[in-house]
Structures are given as C-alpha cells and as structure tokens.
Image (cartoon, rainbow, N blue to C red; front, side):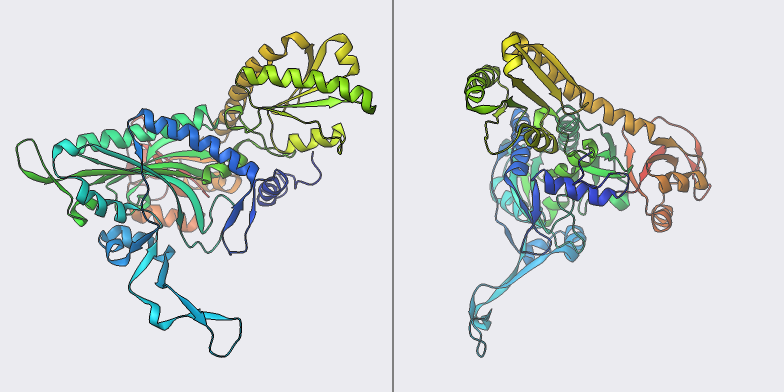
Length: 491
C-alpha cells in the first residue's frame, strides 16, 4: 500500500482525491470550483477525446465550434431547458472595467459598459446551435445535419469535486437535425451505443444502458437515454447521455424544412454528450490503494522501461539495451517511457510509475543483460515474471490486451456481486446503506420516485433497455409494476 494514499475502505473521498494528487492528474485552481488539469491528466483526456472523435467521424459527424456566450433571449426560447439550467448559469452583465474611484489599484465594472442584453456563459449549447441551424436548414436536402462540438461549459456548482463536478469542465456535445422522428430516434440510440462501446472496450468500465424517468430526463428532451456505471463504493455514475429532443428546439427557434412533398415542417433533433467526468469514473472504477490503475487503451504511457544499475559503467551498458527495447516496442505502436533519470533510484521510479497507473513496467539489470532476460511487472495484478529478452515485444503486445480485458472483467464481477434484486422497502434500504445497485419494482409515478429519493438519497438511475417483463409490486407503494428499474445513490 502507498502510505501517502488514504486507504479506500477508510475514507473513499480522501482516497479519490489522494490519487488525483499523487498521480498528478489535476488540482484546484485560484478560481473557486474550477480545476487545473495537469499534463498527465490531460494526456489521458486526449486519449479519450481522440478515440471518441474517431468514432463520431466514422458515424458521419463533423466537428464545428459555437460561441461561449448565449444571448439571454435565445437561452429563454426553449422554456424547459432554460428552467432546467437557470440555477447553474453564470451571467455576463458588463464588458469593461474601470479604476475604482477611491481605492487605488482596484477595479469595478464600468456602469457605462452595461450590456443591452445579458449574456449566458454556456451551460449547454442547444440554444445557440438551434438558432444557427435556422440559417443552415431549408430543405430535406440539408438533412440530416450531424454536428459535434468539443468545448468547455460552465455550470455554477455549489459543491464541487475534481473531475466529477466543477464549475467549468470540458466535454463534447453532439447536436443533430433530422427529417423524421424515426431518424432522430435512430441517431439517439446509435450514439448511446457508441458511448457504451467506448466505455466498455476503451475505458474497461461495464455500463448499463437505459432510459431515464421523466423526472431525471434532460430539460427540453422527450426522452433521455444513458449509460450508468458502478464505482467501487457501490455508487452509480452517469457516464454518458443521449437525448431525443423531438421538435422542441425546432419549434422554439422556428427551424423548418421543405419536405419531399414540398410542405413545411419542423425538423427533429437530438443532442448527446460526455465530459471530463469520465476521468472521475476511470479513477473510481479501477484504482487501488497504490494509486491509479489505467486500462492500456487510455494510458498515455503503456510501458515504462527502468534500468537497474550501479555505477556509470553499468548504466551505460544498460542504457543501450533499454533504448533498443523502447525502440522495438514503439515500432509495434506501443507508447513507451524510457526512464533514464540518474537523480532517482529504481525503487523511487517503480513507486512513481505505479501510482500513475502505467500498465506494464520492464526492469533490466546487468545480470538480466548477461542472461538475456527481462523482468515484466503488471500494474493491474502486481505480479512479476522474468522472460527471455528476445520475446519482450510480442509478450508485451499480448499482455496489454490481457490487462485491458482483466481490468474490465474485474469491474464487471464487482458490479454483479453488488447488484441485488430487492422485493421490499426494508431490503432496499439495506442495500442503499451498504452500497450497490438495487433492482426493484416501481409504480411508475414521480411521487414515489421523489419520496424514495428524499428518504434514502437513492434515485432511479435508469430503466434498462434489456429489461425483461416481470409483474410485481412497487417496493414503496405496493402498487402493480411490470418491470424492475435500477436504483442507486449516485455522484
């Protein structure tokens, strides 16, 4: 166990923050509620971003960029959306500062620079994007319009936690327009599948695909689809959402098109997004008391090579061998760090790369060089093996795949072990007390949903898409139910 990291079972919140700190992922900034993403943390985000961006483009989407500021009148145009985000909005009222009349060195907002119309700092971009789409769409020939944006957004959170909930965060938001409801719904479901596939195959995080209840739905959407993941404290984390917007935004911004019958009708819309919250999911789903555990597909460094030496002569010999190993691994498309720092001991290096979650560590000393062997250490299982040096490249390539699958399997087994079918409210409360997912019958009413939330802090995470029909009674009201839903406490 890394003594600088609070044990996970003692204080989960401190454990999480300690890993972020010691792995060098992020830190709090001078702006309250905002974070600085450090180079190593940003490198992980870049791996995520690049993989998602590739998938978006493969499904026909193009990237664009829209303004950070939204005129208040535009923001108010879709009423439900405006109401949903109103409490989190930052508002720009002036565009200039001037010297304070009495306190030297202090600045105040210049009263003469007050904006004619206040600007909302985007919490989400539907308003400004749909206002733009009005100019881009005239005919069915202009559809579908498949746009994605990589951007930052601001939601003025009162209680923040690095990556999970900050006043400003990075994300992508897709916004698409279609000629029919069927096409828009197909797009909504397609992007949910993209997110689920990315979460499971790249982040190694098993997810449940489902639909949100009306109470949990995105403000301004007719349907919200989501993927939900279980963290190691048994809580849920919403890892991505895809929204069927119906014609709500098209009507709010008067976005119409001439159909094939030469009749005007409103377009159908979707929006979908994931954010740097996925960094939090990655940390909480896989890490241990020794630090970060990274699936190879998002690790900025997949393999670190460390020479074990005494004296300059042995260092020179080992350097050459290490450089050859690194060169051969890179030729196979593996990202490698060659740690030749003379200012740190091998033990220090081992601990540093372990806390940073590098999947594989290769160590070689003079005796290894003489025997033409090399030590291979896995971060996920903390096991070591000595193999012939000539086999290193192919062995490492195969091992990276094994590690990726093992990390996913471990997370899947944890979720299955901590998912419970419950048939009474007492059983339900017991599960919420210890943590986990509760599969329970619910009567379908918002009233019951809110009462359960008030009493247990548990919410309906989703109605699973793969749900089987099963008659039963709501755990709270006793009223009839035809299926179980997923309840959990959540981030």
